Image (tube, rainbow, N blue to C red; front, side, top):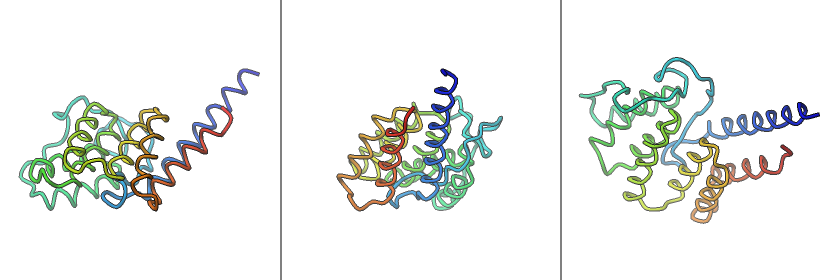
Length: 188
């Protein structure tokens, strides 16, 4: 009997994970959320391929020096869509360095660090983003998604609800709330 409970528990997490990744694939930076196309959940040996493997530090990111901000932003979006989170982090970091007033650079960098499992770094980026833009719906939605990836569903839902209060018509936020509410109502 205990095995059955564990199996159902694993199944509900798989269902939650599938829902998260299906929902997240529709998200685009600065269009209501900072993250996009989280289709791959497979871990692999590389930080720079289609896996959200952890990085030890920013020193592990590829060198993108010399790339202008506008090209770095275009390339960062493409790498993020392709689940190349190490490259997207490096390129978004370049955008932040060259154009520190550009919120999209912070949004993408925070989301890239989240996907790399570097929540210590994403926390710093979200703090800088808050200083830059304040508590916008996008900010709270992205912060909620960060906490969702950490497994802190209560804090994630709280942030999603703050985002909804600021932008009640935001479909991405509504989907995040529905997904978490649905996961919470399923038997463990």
